[in-house]
Image (cartoon, rainbow, N blue to C red):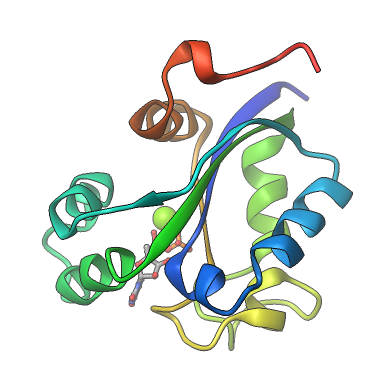
Length: 142
Ligand code: UDP
Ligand code: MG
């Protein structure tokens, strides 16, 4: 299996519910290496840029309002098979469909407010990490 990078975002509901530490702990216990992490407040426009692929979807307005409603914590992660393993850790988009023990099943309240983002391919992982972090912010040797 290849070493991959993926972008996690602890979403505003996660930060507001004081669950950032809980989710980061699960990420660390699952063996992901944290390359970089920061706290940001997105504007609705910046959130729309990040989720541009969903621009035509009916939930786009709600999604960008939610993602700009409070602080987010983007985290650049590295691990073998990182993309699929991270999506397994967080579970399906809708917490009702997520497997027991996943982050979204345990902690999320709805399909929209679902605690955490995870990239959907290694290519998008690199693109999405680049949305929040410069190369020199990605610290590999620790
Ligand atoms: N979303 C939503 N309603 C939907 C589908 C998605 O509000 O019907 C939101 C939700 O916050 C989700 C995000 O849009 O995490 C991106 O959707 P995607 O299908 O990429 O889900 P993900 O990859 O986050 O599981
Ligand atoms: Mg997605």
